[in-house]
Amino acid sequence: MATTSKSPIAVLNAAWRVAQDALPAYSHRCSPKKFTQHQLFACLVLKKFLKTDYRGVEACLRDSSDLRSAIELEKVPHYTTLQKAADRLLLKPLARRLLDATVCSHLGRRRRVPLAAIDSTGLECTSASAYFVRRRAAVSSPWKTVVYHRFPKLSVICNVDTHFILAFETSRGPHPDVADFRPLLDDARRRVGMTSILADAGYDSEANHRHAREACGVRTVIPAKHGRPTDKPARGRYRRLMQVRFQRDAYRRRSQVETVMSMIKRRQGAHVPARSVRRQHRELRLMALAHNIMILLTRRVFDRACLTPFSPRGG
Image 1: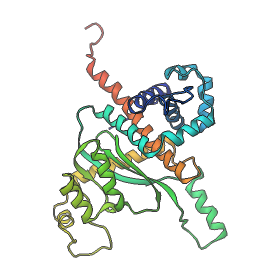
Image 2: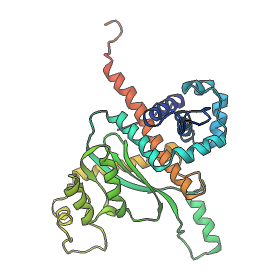
Image 3: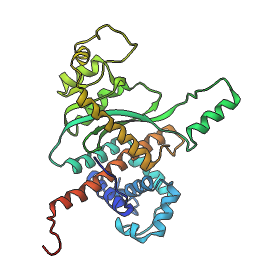
Image 4: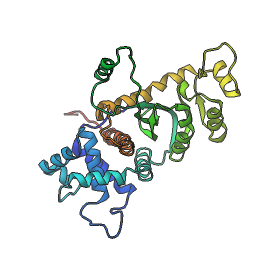
């Protein structure tokens, strides 16, 4: 199991070092060179850690000299500077490079994950509670009990042993999960090797089984329950195999990916503080990266503690 760091200085410094491994100091040789990309990314991670906005993280940096010295920040960036940095640094190609750096630092040379799981979750576009939204929508239409709306959606593949995210994808929900399986698996395999992957019935399809097992060499455990309930055998070789030889003991560990979703929402908030769709996608990428950085930091501390011999007083 994994825990997340509670120290803002430690998280800020860890994000700074991850960015140093993934990005150049400046995006262009003619950049103003007031702040490095490493410092700006660390400030963005601090924003998610503190569950505040751009003005809030600017005020925190201005009030705390320890936070500034942790990343060698001589001046406090304006909140608009951080907003523009988020638009640039959280584009999909750069976000993937940052994720590569976290996975490389997490696993080192042991790029093999025995058991992974895939799942998705939807987040709110507003900080209002779901109960308030449902009651407010029922005022104008008393017959209406369910509110359907578009929402930002985050899909991840994680290591079930450490809760570390190996790949993520952002989209707009409601959206079927089955189409996200193949691109997520290919993206995760670009970073690590996997032995088995767990998924719920939303990812059930013969094409997904075939791609994972035959093209990628990854064993799949997905219940063959997609579609209407029926007593007939499922179509396809691997879907029928899931009906006959389903690995229930391994599938029980799929709940760990739901724990990852819960960790993200509890530590960083369940709503996405952005209005436009493209900025909502950037916020989702930042949430996944911040989650990895907080776990990466605590694992480093734990590993160092394990290497230090313990001797009782007086012994």
